[in-house]
Length: 235
Image (cartoon, rainbow, N blue to C red; front, side, top):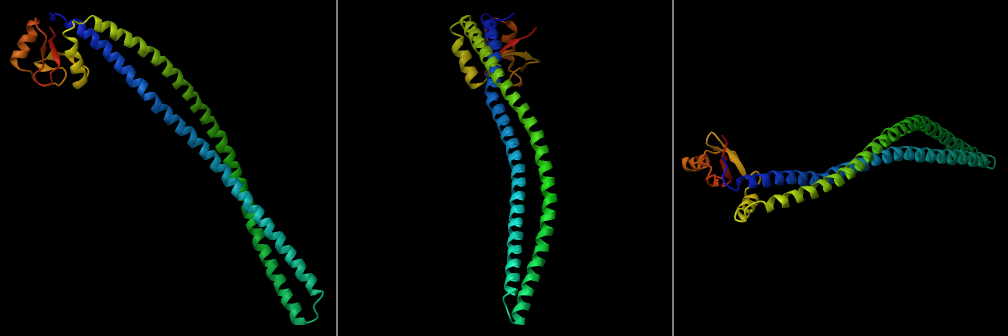
């Protein structure tokens, strides 16, 4: 037998618990959305990084081409100067400069060949990254849309749950509501719990024999003498 008024408190508690669970779900959605946004940003940054690597390689190649043209022009100038000089040592000095420039051209061309291979590799990697990550972004955007729909749905459920809580509160004796609200604030749900083996179903500590005896009678609403939760005896 349950004491008068306890059944209404238990109904209120059940509805309060349902509302609290919905509150937690709704509160967690912004964190989930932020995580989705972070993944999308990360994917986009990875695509940009892969493209930048390709762009950097292309700029390096252009710089090498500029260097090659400059060296070729330099060689042409030296050869033109050779046609004008009359002293052998001046001619030999220009020949030496031409050889140095030609050697430098060979080195630059080797770098260019190596860079072309790297550029092909980076282009392929960037294309694959863009394909894979864009697919991942589409999935994340779908998840973002699902979260928005879920947020809307949970919001509607929460409104309904609040209405149920309000209705349940109207069925509780007025002198019990302050006690319930105080316990809810300072102890938390659940605050109406059964006794199991003489132990409180909330704090799991053994209650006094007086509390257990009163709970067995089922005539008065009694509290755990450890945590202050309302306890009742389950037969």
